Length: 474
Image (cartoon, rainbow, N blue to C red):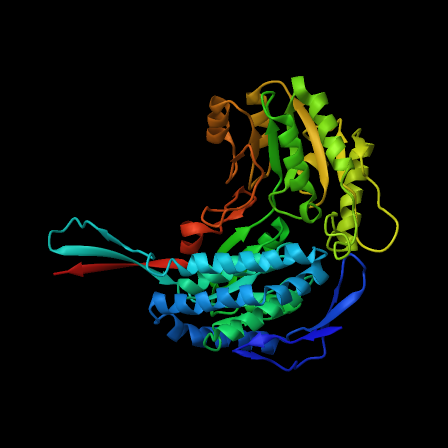
């Protein structure tokens, strides 16, 4: 069983406290690691190290910061097998998928490094003839990065890379469900030779996380997590008026028009719903099907969902793996049971399998209503409720009748329909004839309760900056 130490101020520290975080393999329920939980003093020391390092880090030319980041991208790629093995064991992913996630993390790190010579300000015309107005982009300071369990390697660098290139330093809190991969990333940071204190990776309990997030030196908190976690972060931000950047819950609607390639759409939706057991913020969560093709499309969904097998992906990488823990599985199953009690029909799945591991089968529900909990609340699991509609206007209305607005999907061959939905959907993203994939040169930002700010691309990088206006009289 592995034992990991926190990475603070350029060193893997000896634990000061007795608290430990046990890490389990969700496919076998076996304990695989023990992590040293930081004391509040250690966590505060990480913030103070980051604050001290930021004074010189921000003064480095962006091209020099980029050079460190390119070394980190190289290290993430070189150490991808080690990072992948750690991630696979703690998450239930296949080693191949987990290793690829580290490679993608290296790619997004390199992408943001290339912003070094592209972080631009503005020259604004003044109303006074002997005056210039300069708008400069500046770093915020110390950024607290709160990482989720579902894609912890990619998401860690999705937040850290833009923070670093824009001149900030970071304190990273990995999920307590998946911390071991974060400490493999810390080894990559160490190999890249970053100045001490620029990147700190620290496991901690919730009380200690609050001490970090409310520290006066923290100028920004970035989170990928649930709506309730987002509310908690907003409370933390109030302490010092820190800037929040929140990617929160999602309930991706998929609209299936009668002219769509139904077989292609069904395969894509099932793949979206069963990838990592549906634990994706943008996974398909509700399906609206035009009534003339409803029965045919439900049959296709049932065929493909029934064909998906569950199992330990370390032995069967082609299968669907487990949920993150037993509480998640019990919560999802309770939602299915409540839906059935309200009249929903289980077409396939809907039961807790016997044996070890937090597995739950792909579950297709029909005879559901728009007002049901299973349609209104995020499941974050392999559950797919299907509803029918008559007109595209009705489909748009139902898709928008929701508290979330992260991503959305449309399958159609009619460009007029595509443009109509593109201009009417209340979501930060629309994918036409494909399922979500979060291109890192785009901008992943939610509407409504799906978040504030966003990740990826130019706009995601600029989230980690603040402006200074210089009024120059001459």
